[in-house]
Length: 125
Image (cartoon, rainbow, N blue to C red; front, side, top):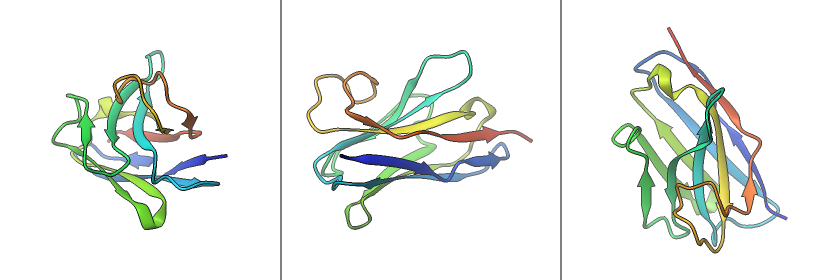
């Protein structure tokens, strides 16, 4: 059974940076596409970024394109989300999710097989 654990969240100032990690246990991530999602209070969960199983294809929401970078390290069984030029509107709980065979766009939360518990990101001065 694949288990995902997010880490790296915390408090950052506007314009600052954070790097989130999504580390897997119980199985290798090699065959899974990974998505990062976020959910702010009172809002729906939205897709932030995704990466294919090979790492050769990435997607970003328009709101984070050019500021966030997703990457994966197969040897560490980990996917990273480097977040730069953070804005207060980036404040949310961030989740990673894994899917082996996907039938929906990877930035859509539907269809993912496994989810982490989330990590809080707060951007405030």
